Length: 392
Image (cartoon, rainbow, N blue to C red; front, side, top):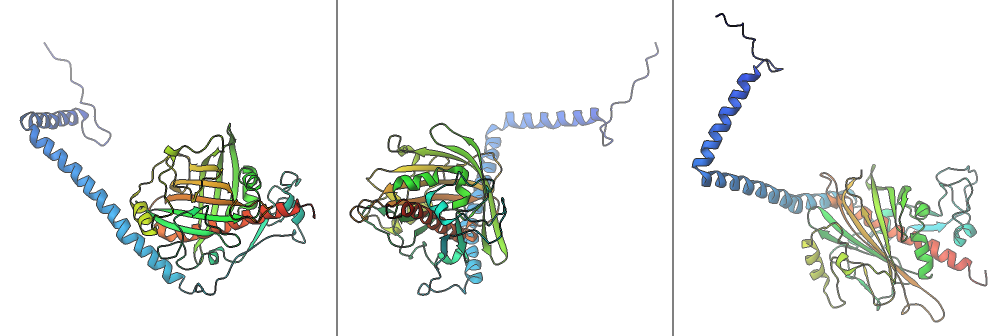
């Protein structure tokens, strides 16, 4: 009997008959199956070799970052900024609470609150001008950080112990290398104001950008039970002449008070007063960045303390692979004159930028901005304390 005419095999979109393609794939799979069944040890060796090659490539990439990218970035930085003043001729940044500009309108970015308003902390009663700032910063903020300050040989302490008094004086900065293009930065300042006053500034999330000079945008996305929040922030810094580094991130903020302290398992390590700086730096350069494990607070104290942790949200848009920090506020009983209350504010943060940007290009600028931020917080806190004195 006559056979019905056969239909042509279906064709692949690129012109190859899909039937032939399937047969070819089945042939290759059968060869692989036979080879693996007759030589399982050889296949395992091949797979092990591929894994070793991948691990070797990873180690080489990390070594290139540690031995080449970081030194090159520091060399470029020194070339661009070789004209900086010497440590004997520092140029401090002037951070003041200022009066408004002569001509202002609600919403204009550079507006400044009146001195009395800023000192009293009336941040919630400024009408329709949500962008008014409390502090004014004059000059290049990087001049706040002297050459070599915070690095090895710069004389920075491994931590601020109760026996150390910084008041009066500028903030202390310490910069430590971390594995995998990371860095840890520690800053601390003593403030002639109460711990409660400083705490109120830090936990007034809606108004942080009015106090912190490096913040150009600050939005509270969610308030949490217990006093925390989720915040979206944008910070800006000049890393090279004519080159600005603007970083955005979404942060989870959690608070820990005297009754609910920061758990020890969330702190990477501790140091004591007898630990050498070289030992701490060597250990820190090997200590990996781990999400949920925060850098050691810069203040090691036996006094009552309150902590605020900040961590970038995984999966949220941002410019950092890793950003985790700890604010610590404590009373300063050993440094305050009789009858006065001082406090200490410290911040420890670990950072790893996204992409191929060497952290060495931005670590100095970030450290300088953190130093200026602490000075701005001190200015506002001490202004409020002075405004509430009986003689005022």
